[in-house]
Image (cartoon, rainbow, N blue to C red; front, top):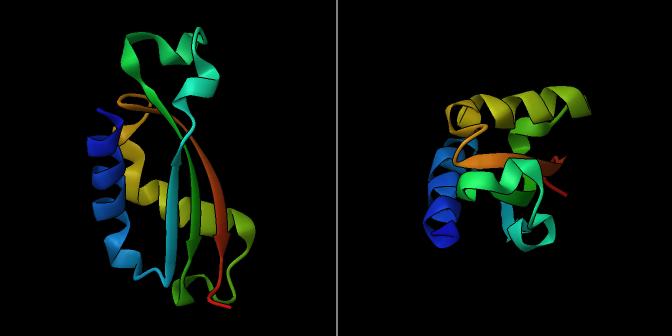
Length: 87
């Protein structure tokens, strides 16, 4: 199930033209957590893209959340983001 969600997340982020993208499923770390009920996923995202140049951290996160907001809080309950401009 989470593999499908990871692929969905990756496809939603495709327009950001990431030079580096890593999606880590951390759902197992949240077993028993209220947000994990019903099978919601917890992910950590590392994303680097030129589109983050000159943006603040908050603006970078907003850009990511704008792409996936309809997936939250279900099927994705939590998304930890590390967003950087292309190195």
